Amino acid sequence: MADFTDLGVKDIRDGVASGEFTAREVAESFNAAVADAAALNAFIVTTPEHALAAADKVDADRAAGKDLGKMAGVPIGMKDLFATHGVQTTAASHILEGFKPDYESTVSSNLWAAGAGMLGKLNLDQFAMGSSNETSYFGNVNSPWRKEGSNAAMSPGGSSGGSSSAVASRIAPAATGTDTGGSIRQPAAFTGICGIKPTYGRCSRWGVVAFASSLDQAGPMARSVEDCAIMLEAMAGFDPKDSTSLQMDVPAWEAGLSADLKGKKVGIPREYRMDGTYEAILKSWEQGKEWLRDAGAEIVDISLPHTKYALPAYYIIAPAEASSNLARYDGVRYGLRELPEGAGLQDMYAATRAAGFGDEVKRRILIGTYVLSAGFYDAYYNQAQKVRALVARDFEEAWATCDVILAPTTPTPSFPLGSLNEDPLTMYLNDVFAVPASLAGLPAMSVPATLTDDGLPLGLQLVGKPFDEQGVLNAGLAIQQRANFAAKPEKWW
Ligand SMILES: NC(=O)C[C@H](N)C(=O)O
Image (cartoon, rainbow, N blue to C red; front, side, top):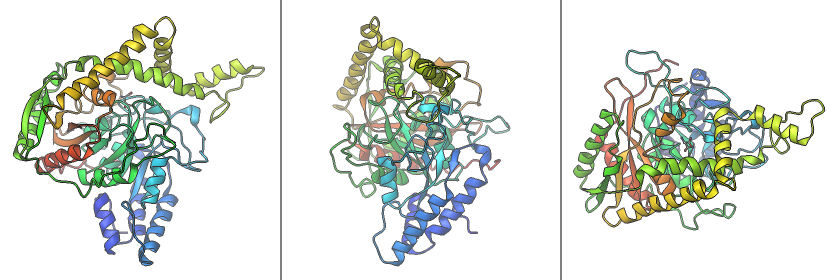
């Protein structure tokens, strides 16, 4: 069987369209790679038949001379937070084990309509809560990357850790992710791939298991900026079923790609120079400035004064919304039910939730319930909302002097699995550079920049004005062309 696993979204789509190979050949090749990579634990369930059926439809459409979609013939991984009709959807939680939705999320429907197929449902942190993919009920995901000279299992980041691991290891050309406070960008940075969180409202949240509804956004994860542009075009669009969906046409991001940044100003936020950030990351940030200058941009110093309050505000707002969203898992409507002998309704709720939710999910529900309780609402929840407004205002003011912002994606590279489990605060700090853009609802992307001396990927982050995914993608492309990140993890799985 021919091996197509080094190909990305654009290569596959164009090769299928020109008849260089068939969509079925591609699907078979990736299905085999997925089956061979069980050691990564990237997938919770695999759906080879879905990938093949979608491929056959594309091949038949091509033979019949029909128009092919944006993602025609591309088999992808689907984060297991998207409801998929008839296919188990768990959010990596025991409480949803066995749940097979009788509906399809809007984002996945859009992708299938564009000609993509599904390789399977990808592992993640439980209910997307985590930064290492260690809170999944279905076990850790392994990063395909290892430190030079070490066999220690590394984190692929989280919560979209199955997505990042699958794309980096080339068992999927692309995958969906979701980002509430960094869940696309941080795993992309940890594994040397690209990932973009679009403006809040670009991708419908309908059929996406809710974590923090005012922050949750879907986006693509792939190995190039071009592939992200193509896939985002297929995913995005107004959806009347999501009341926060943007009523705007989807721009032609792929056609609009240009790495010429003449006339653009790139802002460097001085508050992002934080203690505890790895030297190699500060160095790659400097390098990033040079690359963007080389692409024609002017580099300007900017200030986002409320940056240090963003993470604490996020860890009040996100748990508050989660405690409300997760109240629906009661043992009656979905998945798991624990019904001890002689138990009443309240006992059944308690037993189901005690058995069904993992520790991190329980921690967030407790914090969220606490900050929303009558005596603490003003002191915590309302205060955090005010901070959120200040963080958003910082960005609005910055747009007076720059068009796009360059920052690190994370303060550190990937870490060994197990090393931060006992320390939730250090784990939360992973998202210190990602969360401000989330609170402000802005488009933001991570692009691979370089490797550390011991061989781990580092990413650079670009943050854009509202609705300006194009500006983010174009600056990302300028970095991609200069970083020439061609490193590939050595196969050990
Ligand atoms: N869901 C996310 O965007 C990830 C973030 N680390 C969190 O645990 O909330």
